[in-house]
Structures are given as structure tokens and as C-alpha cells.
Image: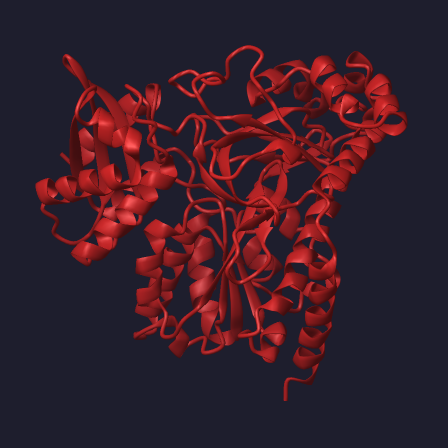
Length: 516
């Protein structure tokens, strides 16, 4: 009998109910969050350079939003390259008190989908604690999922992430954020955590998948978490190895899948073929810079974490603030969470307890429920296509592909799009992954029609500046082979949905050489 499970579920349900009763106070929480950040970092090199004392004094002693106006006036907006070259490189070399008090012990190497190189993001002990607190809050929120069985809380949690064997560099450690946070999980959780410390430490992704597959029959898994692409590959391998019809024949108690990092839409149809019964999908928004949001109710979207080491700002994602390549213009409009509107694309700026300040994280979001502070991720600032005003977002791409895939009864997990010149105008070149025969012309026609239905700007430009659309169907493996060549297999890595710059030539050369 799942006595422990029932006790845990009852306790979690009570706590989550109490949390839901608490009224969300965005203005109060965010002011408090920024005040704590400023107070902690006021004597760092960054804090002294940008007069944090003045901003902090305004936040403590003045009413209204004067403190935010001073924050905007004093502190410039940073992207990764600018803040790393001016500040973070010093912390990486071992200097103390650069953007956050003390030495930075960990640096997360991001997946770097926007360009060829990975990025080194500082991860402080305060950030690790903040991530743990948010993770616990999400577990507490599971109390609202009444369909979860009590004994789920006694089952194994399979977390498919980066290696916990970090690289020691001088006086700090570097690796995937998932490896850093998994390596610091609480002792009480380690009995539930799979695949365990030994397998988690493996750096070779193929060896890790193989060891998990070998050990899979020994585990009673109730919850899996990670990037959908890699879980799909793992589950397919386990099913094939043990000659199963679906994964529930091996793990009958598998109930929930916690995912993040990419849209679930391209993977959902393929995943559901691997399951023997319905599984709950629970979304998280975890970046190398912090745990930004999570789904806290069954039918909800991501709820921003407003009271745990993060201060958010929002830049309307339009031509007044960004150029056609997704680059930020000088002096863009920025607003706080109290001034946002629903159904408008915003680029995110965050200030964090890891020493990121007014940092352009690169993601775009929309508020779907302002009262609940719920959002959905719509894409990346550099992954929108707007060659001639079509304003095509990754969200549009994912949704259109899901609809076409369902119509044709095929599984499309990976894709990417390139904007090309099609004299005298422009065109979109799609590369779509499918292991089933596909009529490219029919697929292209259906895809184009779906996007026209979803995006009015796109529909207009298809009659004017966007002359044509092309689709090339590739094996799914082509995308994973490319990532392997780029050194981005497994963990939190994902394939970029829009390719620009030098990556276009590299990808097209790769396709020409291997899949012509």
C-alpha cells in the first residue's frame, strides 16, 4: 500500500491549495525581488559602476516606480557577448565580486543554438538554491493534478540531462546546467532519482543511453523529465531492445512527462505512439540563466517565477525595438510586468542572483493570462523570419507542422527554416525530418496554407514580397548527425528552428555532402 505516497500527496495537495489562495502580487513581488538583488550586489564591481546604492535608496524610500526609471537610466541593456566581454570573463578567471558577491563556483555551458559557440553562464550558490526552491514549488503544485495516483510520489524520477561530471577549470567547474543542478540534488531525493549518480556522470551520450537502456527493467519509473527529442530516442531504443509494444509494458506506472526547452508540438504525436496509455505533460521554462517559469495547474500555461531571485523586464518585439535580423536597436522601449498586455510578443530581459543584469535572454513570450501571470514561449529573437514583413514565429512554425503532420499521418520531430533570396523577391526554404515517404510538393502546399491561416502578415506577404516556399524532406537522423558534428548531442541541446549567418552555409554543405 502506498501509505507514504498518500501522505505525500495529501500534504502536497494541502500546500498547493494554500498557495493558490494566495493572491499573486506582481508589482510587490518584483519590487522586492529587485531590491534584494540590488542590496546583495551593491558593493560588487558592477554595482559600484552603475550606482546601485542610488537605485536601492529609491526602491526603499520612494513610492511608485521611480526606482525602475532609475534602474533603466543607470544600467544598460546587455546581451551575452557584451556582458561576458565586459564583466563575466573576469569572474570566469577567478576574480571575486564582479557582478555578484564572492567567487563564482560554476559556469553553465549553454547549448548555443543561436550561434556555433556555447556560452559560459555564471551559476552562483544563490541561483542553485533558487532553482531548488522553484523545483519544490512545482512539485507542490502537482497537488492540483487530481488524476495523479498517490503512489506516483514513491516511484522513480528519470531525469535525462547533461553529465554531472563537470570540467574543473582553475578555481571553478563548467558543464550543462542540468549536470550542475543534478549534482546538487537534496539527499532525500536521491533514492527516487534515476539513472543514478554513476550513469549521470557519463559524458559520452551514446554510452549514457546504452546504460540507461540496460538498467531500464530494474526501475519502476513514474515520472520522466528532459528535452522531448532525447526522450523519444531513449524510449524507442528501450522498446526495440526488449521487443515491447510500448513503454508502459515495462514501466506501467509512468504517469507524467516534465519537459522544456522546445515546443512539444513536433514531438507529441511520435511520443504518444510510444506510450500505452495517456501521460500528463507538464511544462517547465528552465534556461542556463535560471528557472523562469513552470506550469502549476493542469490546463494552464507557464507561470512566471516573480518572487525568487529574478527580476523581469519586457521589450515589445516589433520593428521599433528590433531590426529584421532580431538585433536590438538603441534605446528600446522596456516595461515591467505590471504594464504588459496579453497576446503581444515580448523579448525578455532578466536580472538574476547569478549576476545577470538587464540581460537579453533571447526568448520571446506572450502573456496568455495576465491575472495569473501565465505565458507561452513563442520563439527566439533571432529565430523569427521577417524578410519582407511576414513576421513568422517559431510558435507559428510548430503549430502549422503539427497540423500538417496529423493530416498526413506522419511523424515530424525536427525541422529548420532558412530565409533566402528568390530574385527579385524572397522565399523560405524548409528542411523537414520524416522517416516515412512524403510528397514534398503536397507537404509544402499544405504547410503554406496552414501558416496563412495562422499568421495574417504571412498571408499578406505571400501575395507580395514572399515569392515562394520550398520543402526538402530529410531522414530524422540527418538533424541528429548534424548536432553530433557540432558537438551538441544530448542534455539540453536542441536543433535551431531558424538558421542564419554562417550556419546556413555549414548546414547546406552538410546536406549536399551527406543527403543529396
